[in-house]
Length: 427
Image 1 (tube, rainbow, N blue to C red):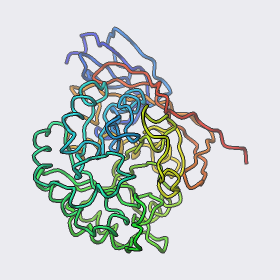
Image 2 (tube, rainbow, N blue to C red; image 1 turned 180 degrees about the horizontal axis):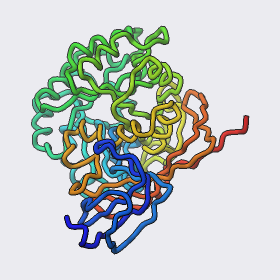
Image 3 (cartoon, rainbow, N blue to C red; image 1 turned 90 degrees about the vertical axis):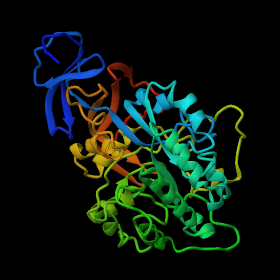
Image 4 (tube, one colour; image 1 turned 180 degrees about the vertical axis):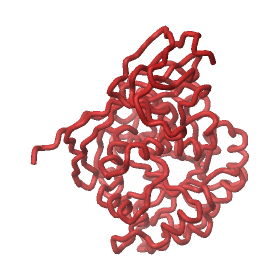
């Protein structure tokens, strides 16, 4: 595109970080007709609108690899897509396991089509998808997985389905062993898409006294996972994750990554700074960063008509607390753990685009690409962060979304779930 033509929007003087292009510096970004027209220092280009973004981060449109946005259909679980998407500075959402073979047409019609955010999905391996599944584990056994039908559903929705979601967690293994996960893997192979696996306890243990060795789950899953499959929740505080019963990095984690498996943070309510420190200090770095926000771990009221309580609502091992949160908040957590900013940006841009096999469409500000752009405030100071274990750490940077462009259209970050920075007390 010629720089003599005016841009629709010119973002002036922001700190551009684009790992896919190796860019990290003060630059301008010009947008025309919903695409990136030009990028570089002090662009000499007229524009219909010039937005001063000096002092702010200008990033490729952020991709949340772990969203839950099948609102109402998944009960309390699903959040409004645009609330956690464009109104939180995020341009692309990947719903993890909400829609399934029985519900994908509704997901397309009532979530994907009306949303201003780009909404994609990892289809649930289970026929029922994410229907209040934390409370009804009996819906998630191998007998509730229809392999061939789910493959056909994934093929019929190939424009939206980029993987398969399953749960390799201790209470499920105590009930069914590895059988459900074998079926989930069969669906992923049939679709030629990655398998995304939740690790860490999700359901209460069965009441008949059955037990299972949580540290045996990862080795068993390595037998059925393939290069490109994704291990979720490396920083979980629950058993069955990357940290074994001895408080050490599970010995097979490095083997898994060497075999080509990927790691997604999937922040969520079970995220632990204590566990994250152990995993990172052991030399393991996640590939992608999903927020894992849902109706159980945010301060939003439950949908109208939802029963007031469920017997498991007080189960501390499920959800210890509720808070406001965003993908930018998850990025702040990563920075506080010592992960460099360019790597954190890569985890929400280039790397997830590669995971989705959409590098030619998303995850970069290269001229000619779709104009998905996230602009963040980069606040400096001493900020208190706290996880659901009660562990507190001090961050020196706090990232907060300002606005985003989704195919060149601006959306201000005004979502009700966005947190405010909390200053740490002086030492």
